[in-house]
Image (cartoon, rainbow, N blue to C red; front, top):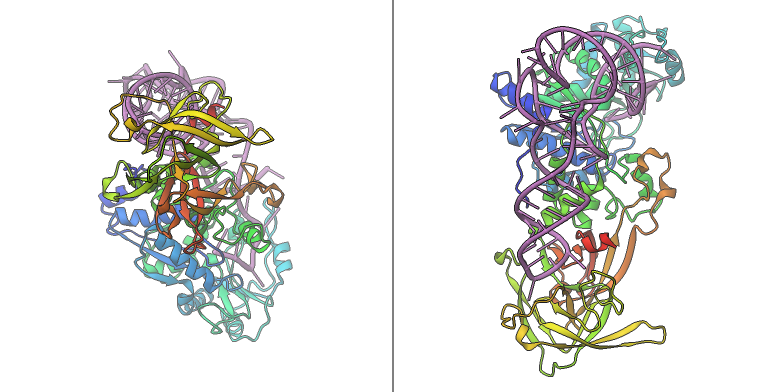
Length: 550
RNA sequence: UGGGGUGUGGCCAAGUGGUUAAGGCAGCGGGUUUUGAUCCCGCCAUUCGUAGGUUCGAAUCCUACCACCCCAGCCA
């Protein structure tokens, strides 16, 4: 819940200037994912940019499924994308599908053909590749390049009518096989695919390419600013070439920005898909995945992800964001949002030897800084558990938790003084004995005593047992994306499961609440949780200056 | 060897000819603290890829060079 001033960037500056100078009245953007996979953190950047800009300047932003290639697309992805965009906190002006423009796109293809700007090529894919030339040598004109408009139209109609098999022919823009920009060497506009489309069904057996469909779809929707990543920069001349030759209702402009690169993560859909298909993760929403669904399940908040997108900025510069920026953004947001409670992950029994009464009920706020979050009751009694790491028989320099001969405060409870311990045959501590100081009850302490350390605990009798899943980075290298096959680089400790003893509130099913296990980290219940079987996912640890010093 | 881009502190990122080069993250030092968390304060680029040049004055203009990224799918 950090309040921040939105940082500026070159696109925002440009739009602001255009509005000031009256060049643009209302800005219209769009987020155009292809429904061939789940959205990831890179898409989050684009979503925040497109929807954020529209919001900021009082414009509109559409969600458009760029569904021009039915081979890899499915309804599952369409549904997931809608859910993810909404969850991030954005609402689209219109929900669009490029497939809904297929009729118009087809008419315009005819327009190109009739004007001699497109032709049907019957070269095979291999021939086309061979004749495209290289980066330094021009290509060779197709033998079919100079057909008459009538011939082209007849052939194109036959393509549409299903008379030609896949690969037998394709529609190409007639630009120049000698262009230094290889994207302009008569790019493909339509291809034959005898498969049904998730939305258009079996209505078509020819489908437009991205290059042909995108700009025209932008124009149909009245998009003013068509934002995309840098790899499309070389396509912009083609984008404009088409808009100029077609009777489109508006003139969108494409602006490119650099894509997000995040340390330790892969954002290639192909590689993410491979992780899912080969079972290296439990699914697209595995909490270790950089997908929006994965981050949601892990317990990242939409506001935290949006804060991250603000912090990373938007430029045209290649960039690799450190993981700490993401984690820091999540922590900063969750700090003000999470309910704080106590959980012990590695229990060590503590007996308060001078406690001979019934358990005392302590009223404890869910968030000390936010009384509006309310409070709950925690029992304190004779038998407790603390975290094993909070007791050291032989403390190192600077350790200020519980030690032999020392004192420590049990958070929200009392100061306790060390009395003794027992060990098993291996020398492992089995129990610790302490005496509590009745005059030091939290918020009623008149003893004047000060102790260096405060540790968390749970009351044995009322504690509940839960499962915890602790996640670490999926890959053991910072640049898994630069490997063709990152699977061998998967971090074997990326998921560690365990049990925890928690105070009563944490034992109840509360799937929507963000929690902080005090002194440990932020946690959220996994959707697999059931009444009586609660599973917590660790979203992110707390910063730990002591652990770092060691 | 073709075309298109990009180079500001460890990582991001403002800045577009004129005070001491914003800010964030990380780091470091200190304070507060019943979370070694949060919060607060301070420190952290005589220098803007390199070398020249123009100018009273340049990260911002010019020239050359260097490095890195993208492009040869009927993928997007």
